[in-house]
Image 1: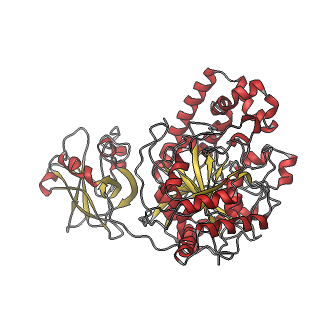
Image 2: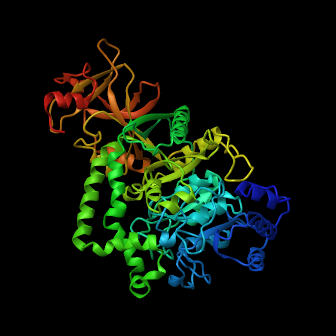
Length: 601
């Protein structure tokens, strides 16, 4: 009954409803493990009978437990009570008395943890072969590296043996194994998943990540695992948003021809070009942008102060048993021994400068879409050169946590040579639901297998357009981004949505008075009207009243028609207010008017 079943959440729920038991699922897990016969996947595999006892303790199916009877695995730098945590280093190992915060949440949701997976030692690497326990084999092609540092977690899901797994992600460890094993890799907003009970790599940049066969399964596990943890100084009380249909079109930034890099892999480039075309068909407005500022940020991860964060984790072990650490890992981390506190502060300053330089580009876009990996490397490639392929794997991942972005790696259709395709969607902190919702579009439009299994990815169910707790507001003057009154929006939690234009039925005026200089937008039936440039912002409905209470006459909030025929709330001007004003309809853009007048912005 279970032998041909994909271990997705929906399939297991149906099997349980039809009479299967979690004990049956555990037996099938061990059957699949025996068939795969890869001792490198787990550092610790739980005993079959103890797992059955845990499953029996769940009792009858409980619809209040969203992950009841769902099997998963955890990377072995995440604490599970009573099971040794090694972080990939036997000399570092300890046995925790308590579950990590996230493990406790998953246990409370009814999930069953079957074992602790192999990793690049101390979560330092993107290849999955820097381990003394014997590297796991890539689920899709054993000649290819499994990806790291969460190698075992990616491989176990790729084989379809568990529904989801936990990894961690500092430089891309929750995304690179996803691309290499043809699965989904969800990298949350920093602080959404508590790091209590996790051996850190870079504590300020780490997050637990989630691998799954589908986007919906990854997001369901994320929903169950998350929560504010006051014992974790980096945990954030973020509001969890359900997956809902996203408004289109979206402005999606893609590396331009001068900054995209595939290291000579023309097949990978063709695959990415195909996927970007598919994203455009799904409603994305593709904008090619210069990624060099982001690459400069990525360079800070291993050249700046953040290497010293890794050093703090193993400093005592380096002093007592230096040879216990993998030689490649030791060489990377001990670079911190040549750094000073002054170097650290110079790194912080440099990162702040680079972030500021990248802000205009990122603010203009809804999300980025990048190749998850630039090319594929074999195990033999890493034996010949253990550093360069690893660094190349981080081309599109290393900058993400330094910019506090969230992301999701999603498989796309296979490349022309049969290897898995994958893209990663990235957005600002708190946009986890938005990127996941768009990632589902690739499942609806791409024919592919789930991981290394023979099961095709099912088309996801349609998402509801749930009523929003926000309202879109069109602004055409001093409230636009970087202009004098924009703070009145951002202080109330408003976020930029898109640039747009009105329909061609409006007059536009520079009103008398100020500062600040203010425009007036007036719908007109007369001649010499036109389409006026504006910005659309999203404002919490709870803050809308506070915002409009401060709008002075002759301005008001009314309904504005956009060039695509849609209607939004927006700034309008009373007809009497344009007395003594300057007609700037022909200019049609407040920023352009300010530039002509040399009015400071």
